Image 1: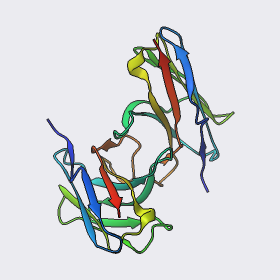
Image 2 (image 1 turned 120 degrees about the vertical axis):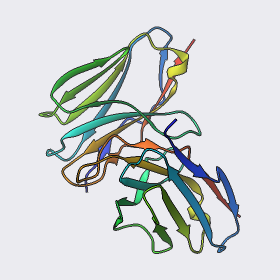
Image 3 (image 1 turned 60 degrees about the horizontal axis):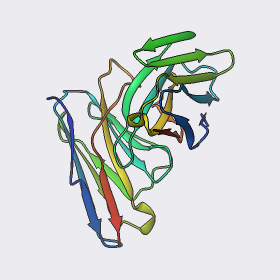
Image 4 (image 1 turned 90 degrees about the vertical axis):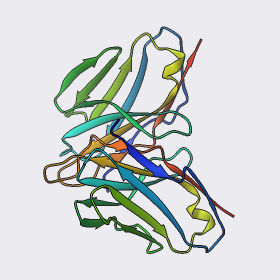
Length: 110
Length: 115
């Protein structure tokens, strides 16, 4: 059973701070990693994906991947109240569908 | 704008009364997915279509069926809803060249209530 683990939170950060969201996965053969944002009562929306070890930056968001440690993270710089949402980590392995974690609820306090 | 549309947005049904949820897409993606999501839980994949090729997850109850009459439309049929089937049902699509992909586009979801 392929598993994706996330701390459910809530993770509370003050406005302007860096939010750090973490995710571990069980399948060492996993190839692609995705971060989805889900506002309360809404559907998930893809914000970033990463395939290679290291960092990938897109605006205020940075995804970090360490395949040896089976660990992927999402950093949100200059956090805003509008970033308050649940962040779902998702992992793709081989020819099987995407596996989602339960998500981490982020609360940015103004 | 190209998008994924789900109807209805809210569905109330009675215990045991069949219900059909619909999904349409203008993205022309060849893969379509149905997920069930309960509060504070991960989206749970029920099944997916790669074109007309239907793929059922092993733990999807027989109570759940799906149809994809063409590229644009996909339906989720719940034959005899139970109280435990109350959830948000999410339709998603992806374009793909031969296998499920991680970049998925979700519809707004249908919130199902079972009385």
